[in-house]
Length: 103
Image (cartoon, rainbow, N blue to C red; front, top):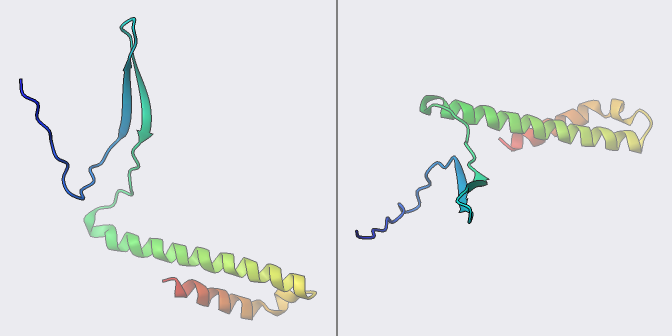
């Protein structure tokens, strides 16, 4: 019997469901321990990848804009009485602008 070694493909990642360590005990029993679980990415067909990417980008931009607005709202309220109401147009405009910059 000959030993053969297999070289891994260069810079190619194969999908792995999990990494399992098998341990044999003196009494003959076998224990399997899961070391790591594979991370399955989003399952999107090739046709829909561009659309999915755009949707995720918009969702991130919306998240940035809303968190920025909440930060500005809190700051305005701390500065003046009814400050958030007075500075509503300014705060929303600036937070939307910051969200759009991320696109």
